[in-house]
Length: 136
Image 1: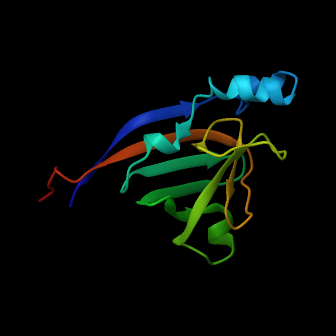
Image 2 (image 1 turned 30 degrees about the vertical axis):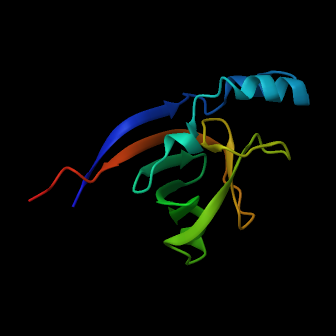
Protein backbone atom coordinates (compact mmCIF):
# COMPACT_ATOMS: atom_id res chain seq x y z
CA UNK A 1 0.00 0.00 0.00
CA UNK A 2 1.39 3.39 -0.96
CA UNK A 3 1.44 6.63 0.98
CA UNK A 4 0.04 10.05 0.25
CA UNK A 5 2.19 13.14 0.66
CA UNK A 6 1.01 16.72 0.35
CA UNK A 7 2.44 18.51 -2.67
CA UNK A 8 0.17 21.51 -3.06
CA UNK A 9 -1.88 23.80 -0.89
CA UNK A 10 -3.92 26.70 -2.23
CA UNK A 11 -6.13 28.76 0.02
CA UNK A 12 -7.25 32.26 0.75
CA UNK A 13 -8.29 33.67 4.08
CA UNK A 14 -11.42 35.16 2.58
CA UNK A 15 -12.15 32.42 0.06
CA UNK A 16 -12.04 34.94 -2.79
CA UNK A 17 -9.67 34.82 -5.72
CA UNK A 18 -7.94 37.98 -6.89
CA UNK A 19 -9.72 37.68 -10.23
CA UNK A 20 -13.14 38.23 -8.65
CA UNK A 21 -12.39 41.90 -8.03
CA UNK A 22 -11.61 42.63 -11.69
CA UNK A 23 -14.04 43.42 -14.45
CA UNK A 24 -15.39 40.15 -15.83
CA UNK A 25 -14.91 40.53 -19.55
CA UNK A 26 -13.82 37.50 -21.56
CA UNK A 27 -10.44 39.12 -22.08
CA UNK A 28 -9.91 39.73 -18.35
CA UNK A 29 -11.07 36.20 -17.47
CA UNK A 30 -8.74 34.70 -20.04
CA UNK A 31 -5.79 36.77 -18.86
CA UNK A 32 -6.41 36.14 -15.16
CA UNK A 33 -6.76 32.37 -15.71
CA UNK A 34 -3.03 32.18 -16.37
CA UNK A 35 -2.27 33.29 -12.80
CA UNK A 36 -4.83 31.23 -10.85
CA UNK A 37 -3.27 29.38 -7.93
CA UNK A 38 -5.16 26.10 -7.99
CA UNK A 39 -4.90 22.48 -9.03
CA UNK A 40 -4.89 21.98 -12.80
CA UNK A 41 -5.65 18.73 -14.66
CA UNK A 42 -1.96 18.41 -15.61
CA UNK A 43 -1.04 18.47 -11.88
CA UNK A 44 -3.06 15.33 -11.03
CA UNK A 45 -2.04 11.69 -11.45
CA UNK A 46 -4.08 8.51 -10.80
CA UNK A 47 -4.26 7.81 -7.07
CA UNK A 48 -3.78 11.46 -6.07
CA UNK A 49 -6.14 12.83 -3.45
CA UNK A 50 -7.58 16.33 -3.22
CA UNK A 51 -9.20 17.61 -0.06
CA UNK A 52 -11.38 20.59 -0.96
CA UNK A 53 -13.05 22.82 1.62
CA UNK A 54 -15.84 24.90 0.12
CA UNK A 55 -17.99 27.54 1.75
CA UNK A 56 -20.48 24.86 2.87
CA UNK A 57 -18.82 21.43 2.56
CA UNK A 58 -15.72 19.28 2.44
CA UNK A 59 -15.02 17.08 -0.58
CA UNK A 60 -12.57 14.18 -0.87
CA UNK A 61 -11.68 13.78 -4.56
CA UNK A 62 -9.54 10.85 -5.72
CA UNK A 63 -8.09 10.81 -9.24
CA UNK A 64 -8.82 7.51 -10.99
CA UNK A 65 -7.18 8.30 -14.33
CA UNK A 66 -8.67 8.99 -17.72
CA UNK A 67 -10.31 12.15 -16.39
CA UNK A 68 -12.43 10.28 -13.83
CA UNK A 69 -12.60 11.11 -10.13
CA UNK A 70 -14.19 9.39 -7.14
CA UNK A 71 -15.95 12.09 -5.10
CA UNK A 72 -17.09 11.85 -1.50
CA UNK A 73 -18.67 14.47 0.75
CA UNK A 74 -20.68 17.60 0.09
CA UNK A 75 -23.59 17.23 -2.33
CA UNK A 76 -22.64 13.61 -3.09
CA UNK A 77 -22.92 12.63 0.58
CA UNK A 78 -26.20 14.52 1.01
CA UNK A 79 -27.70 12.58 -1.93
CA UNK A 80 -26.38 9.13 -0.89
CA UNK A 81 -23.94 9.08 -3.81
CA UNK A 82 -20.76 8.50 -1.78
CA UNK A 83 -17.88 7.32 -3.95
CA UNK A 84 -19.58 8.52 -7.13
CA UNK A 85 -17.32 8.43 -10.19
CA UNK A 86 -17.60 11.65 -12.18
CA UNK A 87 -15.60 13.95 -14.39
CA UNK A 88 -14.80 17.49 -13.37
CA UNK A 89 -15.98 19.86 -16.10
CA UNK A 90 -13.86 22.66 -14.66
CA UNK A 91 -14.15 25.70 -12.41
CA UNK A 92 -16.26 28.82 -12.65
CA UNK A 93 -16.61 32.08 -10.76
CA UNK A 94 -20.28 31.14 -10.36
CA UNK A 95 -21.30 32.11 -13.89
CA UNK A 96 -21.10 30.47 -17.30
CA UNK A 97 -17.42 31.08 -18.06
CA UNK A 98 -15.65 27.81 -17.24
CA UNK A 99 -11.96 26.97 -17.06
CA UNK A 100 -12.02 23.39 -18.31
CA UNK A 101 -8.52 22.29 -17.25
CA UNK A 102 -8.87 23.64 -13.70
CA UNK A 103 -9.82 21.04 -11.07
CA UNK A 104 -10.12 23.31 -8.01
CA UNK A 105 -9.05 26.81 -6.97
CA UNK A 106 -9.85 29.11 -4.05
CA UNK A 107 -12.60 31.60 -4.81
CA UNK A 108 -14.01 29.47 -7.61
CA UNK A 109 -16.74 26.80 -7.83
CA UNK A 110 -16.09 23.25 -9.05
CA UNK A 111 -18.49 22.01 -11.70
CA UNK A 112 -18.94 18.26 -12.15
CA UNK A 113 -20.20 16.56 -15.31
CA UNK A 114 -23.47 15.67 -13.55
CA UNK A 115 -24.21 19.46 -13.41
CA UNK A 116 -23.49 19.70 -9.67
CA UNK A 117 -21.67 22.91 -8.79
CA UNK A 118 -20.00 23.45 -5.41
CA UNK A 119 -20.09 26.62 -3.40
CA UNK A 120 -16.95 28.77 -3.46
CA UNK A 121 -13.73 26.86 -2.72
CA UNK A 122 -11.89 28.08 0.37
CA UNK A 123 -8.97 25.63 0.50
CA UNK A 124 -7.48 22.94 -1.75
CA UNK A 125 -4.85 20.40 -0.73
CA UNK A 126 -3.34 17.95 -3.20
CA UNK A 127 -1.74 14.79 -1.87
CA UNK A 128 0.41 12.76 -4.25
CA UNK A 129 -0.02 8.99 -4.19
CA UNK A 130 3.36 7.26 -3.88
CA UNK A 131 3.04 3.59 -4.79
CA UNK A 132 6.74 2.98 -4.14
CA UNK A 133 6.40 3.58 -0.41
CA UNK A 134 5.31 0.47 1.45
CA UNK A 135 3.50 0.57 4.80
CA UNK A 136 3.87 -2.33 7.22
